[in-house]
Image (cartoon, rainbow, N blue to C red):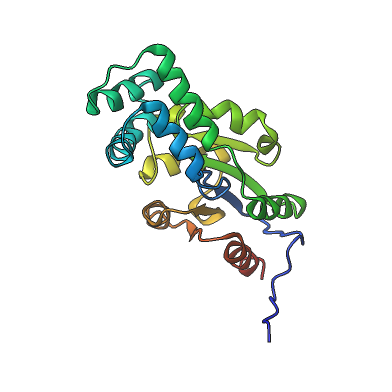
Length: 215
């Protein structure tokens, strides 16, 4: 017999006195598809086994805003023994940027239910400065009272200073913040400051966690 969930989807979620701060990548967004990943490697013209380690090795610097988008891709190319033209770098950037734009509809439903419940919401993403406009001026921007992008702040999760910046801008203490992220190290970094946090594994578990805070 199928178990009936006690958590109802599409029901408003009200958590008074708290600000729920969401990560973006692989929480609100879905992971890039295999087709997206193959497209990116195809543009680079190399092998996946060589491309992806180089892609991630340089990512923190890009997300922290210490290197430009162009220098990020040049660094990857140099590791692969390539000297990519500006035209190819533009194509790589566009394919990569586009691959992170697909939204998890179930997580979106949770966000809308929180908004309808009057719960304060904010976004905190380890991302390059180029994502700031999409976060703020796409439809996601209507859900959040504030958007924090690591590339604009010069620091990344799980550093304590990025959480301190967020709390300062929102005018709240650690006790007033709830943080959602798919990476355990980021969640533990928040918890070390006294922030209530949750490791995202799916929208259903997220909804259950949030509903537990309404009691």
